[in-house]
Length: 64
Image 1 (cartoon, rainbow, N blue to C red):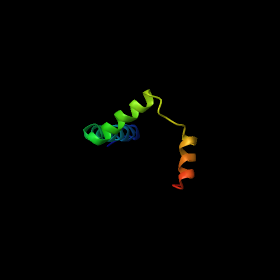
Image 2 (spheres, one colour):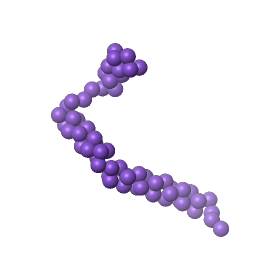
Image 3 (cartoon, rainbow, N blue to C red):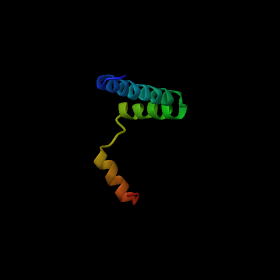
Image 4 (cartoon, helix red, strand yellow):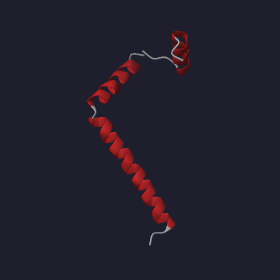
């Protein structure tokens, strides 16, 4: 029989494995990886805006 500590450890391991699988899914998705690389380039080039600026743009455009 499993102890409470064993169950807690199994839950943590299960959660970690799910995260690893999700990471692999992202890594094999070419479109997602391209978007991540583009976002990193935008960040390096300082083509960014704050969250508040982004929300304000959405409001002005009528999207929210």
